[in-house]
Image (cartoon, rainbow, N blue to C red; front, side):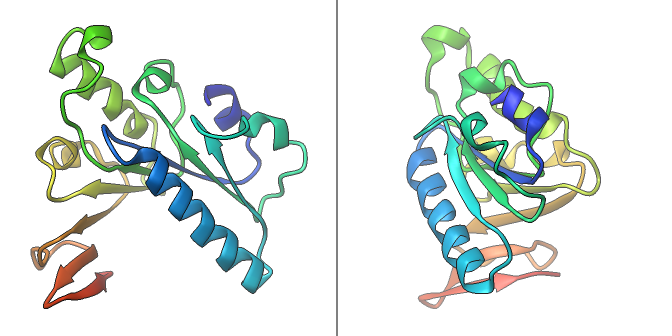
Length: 169
């Protein structure tokens, strides 16, 4: 993943979390693929910690394409680059035998944000204290998602009166 992010000629979207990474990455990848096919704006690739390594496709990727990656805590420990869009779904106790403590595990997950710039985007789970606790580390635009209405100053997706809503600004 680290080498791919360095070589990728297109925008990258990385997804991490303690649970739901594969499902979310697959869903976002399929949504991107459908949108890009219908709009003719490029091609979407899905991989990272799932499927084929995306480095296998880097030579055919174009600047208009999008790479959607699942990124594990183990991969994040070695990162020295962040995706253009970084999503942290949740952070709950997981792999503590490897990381040693919840603080170390959280620090590994936080690395997805560490190398972002002011022009990048972060998406953090609002209902999860671990993911939401990283909001002070966001350098660019912050979006969130929640099963409850969002505070007025937040942008993101939320459920209200049984409807999925999106606020941007």
